[in-house]
Length: 261
Image (cartoon, rainbow, N blue to C red; front, side):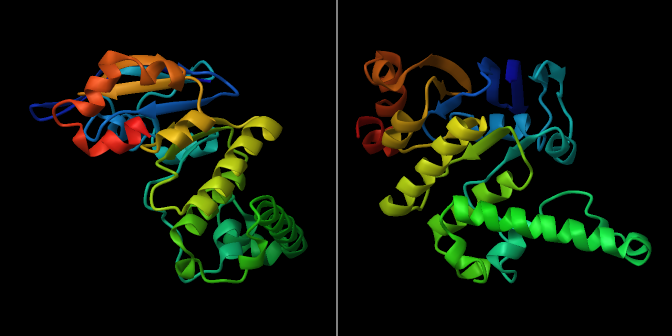
């Protein structure tokens, strides 16, 4: 699905990503872990089109998408969520979903005048889809709540719902568990598993919660100091000396609990 081939990116004298290569197989939930400063978020930004690489190639289903901007990747079915959700706080939960689909006829003044019945039918279909997404995520009781009033975990579910409004097949999840309580984290994990299993979504997940990674992801890629240092299933990686050193050695103390949980 996604091929990352020898991607590198530097910021001045800092080599944030150094010749990283791996594949996110279609239908997989692939994890990307590593201590803070490993280069994970920079790599995500490159894949998602927010940053150009200095070198290397990225392919989506065999098509070279290297350097394409985010809005073009959106139309190709590659979307990204963020560690800090970016909701429209003064719009309702349902409205946050309804604004997502691209090229809505109602956004065009001329179309609204000349093809009003078509605009109405399209709006009804988008509304139906939004309600289906809310029901799938079990947050339909919040449909009329202002998005700014949601808890952190509810906002993460809303972010996931917005990817569902695009019919995306490849989703980059940036720390979906950050700031989420255990109950909502379980609901979020359930939704990711169902989207993967029932609807064929492919995920690549950055996460520091190793229990969540162990539940969701196989394979798991490990980065440290801008490089890919190991990959495999989580049980094997927990015993890998190089991975343990990356988390527990110099500069990795902040992730001790996550790495050993």
